Image (cartoon, rainbow, N blue to C red; front, side, top):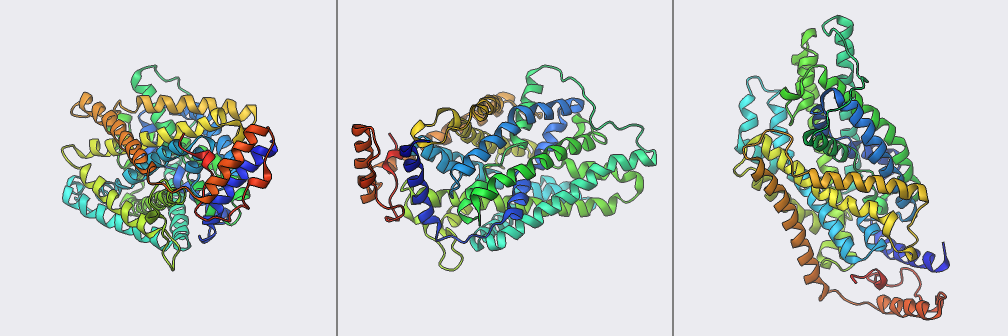
Length: 516
């Protein structure tokens, strides 16, 4: 890397770090590994993989080879090169410009807000498996709204109190999920031993039929289930040793994720056919049937459901907390009002971002219940959220391929080749996300809803960014850096004397990362 590249990257990093110094460094390596497992292991998309039937093993292997491994390589590279609070948002902003960074943060925020909006729907769906004769609970919109309010309130409290409390919620949630999944994976083997299951082949290889439906299922299970490595990197400024621990957390968690997804999908298919699956609560459904032969399902299922509720609650807390960091960091960069960056005097958390995003999340949960059935509402919310996430991922995989050379973020040729695979897989997911994988009342209307909301929301994000450009302050640091960059361009050598000392102006940012 040239001296000019090092200066550009080091200066951008130091400016973010100057703000991050006000945050508490709470996360160690074990917290990061459990957070990776909590965020990446998505029970919803185990249910999506069940739709692939006996072909799921082939799909998982292809997904791991074409997406999961490329993602891990790209995130390891970027988190080691640029371990700053804001993660993917800052990576995209520094690699390209402010506009790209803002749109990435906008889509990441929409993803988290909408996904957390699923909390009420999931809560009542799971409770219907616990309460005797409680099938009616899952279709009660009043209960869903009440559960949504409670879920959002809890996530706001967790985010407001900070990672000193939040990391323990994450750790307990990850442990709860691992215990439940262990019971699910064991159920077919126990039934096989008892003789109540004639045969079980969890790793059977079956070629999938080629159709639009199977390709859509593959793209959704790939992108929905195997994303998240970069999400934990948003907390880089709150990690004790981010440059060392963030890449290691990826290495440790990746094989665990791959094994769990394959075996858990096989376990569900041992008891539930793809056509009879409950896409909202596939794990409780499989646990109920898997332990029925032992006569203990009335004890196992409620415990499993409660553990899953703990897992979901922790997941929503993690996603919501990440979403509050994005406007905070964008405020540091003057892309949003400074109001979003103000920290609570005691807990050192962006309290205004917490309040704003809490209201937005509850509004999304209410709006999603208008005029559609439960499963369609769930599928709409899930697809909207992950499509927004997919748009952010297009930028993630573009960074190793198209970032400016002077930024110093381009990796080795092998990582760039992996990024190409990831980019293609992500693009496939975004394009196919408009096609439903469940029966809906109006397929065309469903597709128009997905496409219209995604396009409209990004247009709104672009308008907000453009409107804020005339109000962004130009600091002394920016002016000095403009002169420095101009001097480098004229002389062809770094003009070190024109650079201010890193971190001397807390509110400044590198104008060479500007909107262009």
